[in-house]
Image 1 (cartoon, rainbow, N blue to C red):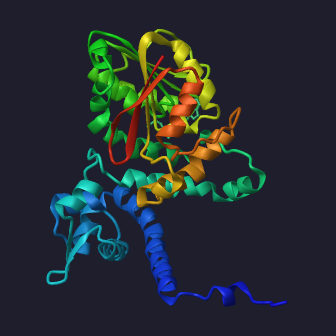
Image 2: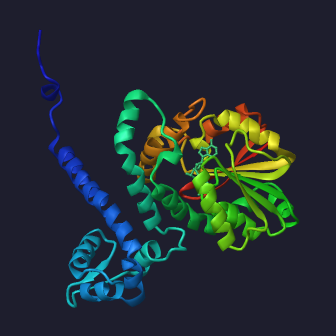
Image 3: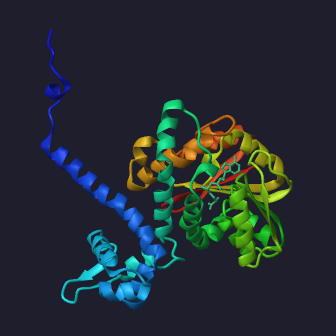
Length: 360
Ligand SMILES: C[S@@+](CC[C@H](N)C(=O)[O-])C[C@H]1O[C@@H](n2cnc3c(N)ncnc32)[C@H](O)[C@@H]1O
């Protein structure tokens, strides 16, 4: 009987080993960078470089009222990662137009500091998550650090500003109905970024934002006041399976359908609350149907967030379906039609979003 070990039978390929170590180095730098990007946003380091660059580290520190020695080290790490441009001739730092669009322009659809805020804060539950892997128990959205809710709003908000109205126009007959005054329910609305965008776009329609998380609804109400749309938006604390109201022309769910514990039950309830020719718009993270086709940089991010936030939330609720944030079109269609909808199609997409229309 041979006692060949796994290592003898399957020896290490040196090139593949080096590549994996290199990948780990990049990831390690990126992991620390995430917190530094949050700091750069919070202390206006990026916006100051954008407004006044090229600047020395002393000038950045003076303009932002921060300590130069920290800022100098921060700038060098940013330059090493390609997030800031460094000129060795003048020892000055600056943002290129592309770096500014991603890091300093808070309205840009690809503004990333909000996403860094989300990923740094969502990882804070790591000890609870490790335990949840052992027990299979869920962790509710409300159990996360407050920065998760703010990071989510800042991550998704600008893309809703850029694309949401195109998505509604891609639905069958919904935009004309809302223009003359319709009823919209935005389920799992969080801080209300998409809810308020729709209220601004359709002043003759009534919008209700619904979320089970009371603290998020309180912030959403403040946001609606600040945006001067509080006269046409209501917010309600309720679950997606039990919210009030009927005869909605449009029900929306932005990046939260896969978070639901009972997505089939949610689909059945949405169907009951729509008018006969109403539409349900489901916006989900972009995904292909087969796992191997989602093994991409975006798929990695979505699976990772799904592991720390979306799937635990679903598992914390009744049924605990655990659809996951990379379910893709086929699985989503199955769940929606099981809930009673007879028509389902992909109405629009972006590189990071799939937009589905379901009709009774
Ligand atoms: C990823 S966030 C998306 C928030 C918002 N739609 C957006 O795009 O900015 C998911 C939201 O779903 C809410 N949620 C999770 N489960 C829910 C349920 N069963 N009923 C209602 N809301 C729920 C959470 O509280 C959270 O606000």
